Image (cartoon, rainbow, N blue to C red; front, side):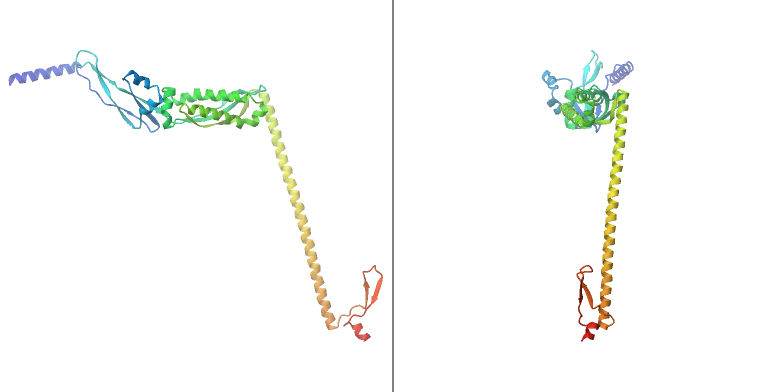
Length: 322
């Protein structure tokens, strides 16, 4: 019993000595990687067959190793670094690559605007805005193409460069006058090319558009165009005023005609009403014998010269003749 106690005491003392001297095997702590909602993760083995490592260089391989979990435990392997049992370290057996899919927006204006030149050698710059993102289903293609590059860097380099190249190419085909009238056509052609190209690389560009107006390098050109634009605006304003005055005059004339027609109609109605009153009064007078019609009438009007002396039945004169 005493012997056992002695051995235990020696073992405990040895353990204490080893602990104090740092001769203790390190603990293999668990390691985790958290994947945020705007991220897509890939878990790739760091060791394996050569064929497996070669397969990494394909979209299909990345699709198989894309994970949906938001908390990934990293398996770790013990590696001996010396003869003593405590001479060990732990290394990760897999690598987690996270792709941030958050949208990136750029407004290249001012000094960062796209510089171009027209077919008639007028130099100018045009501001551009663009927004891009990575769809979840496109992350394997994106990772395969850009090998871990961030979207923000690609936006400032590859995307801007292709935009600039295509805009310069399209603007150089047109005169300055054509450019001012065909800006929409140019940006439509450029957008179609750039959007289609980067979609094949795993990037979705949702918006490409002009930001601001054309800025000419030569201030004299800018002043001349400003004066021309002002003159056109003034002419347009005057044309609008003239058209409004013309419409007003037409309206007033129409109102005057309507008023005259209404007054003529009222006058005719009044004449008819007066004639009706006279006729009714005459009829009443004839009936009562208080009114005597003339016995002589002019046939055919005052200028015909034909006079007739015709008695009328029921008149006072006709009664006397009987």
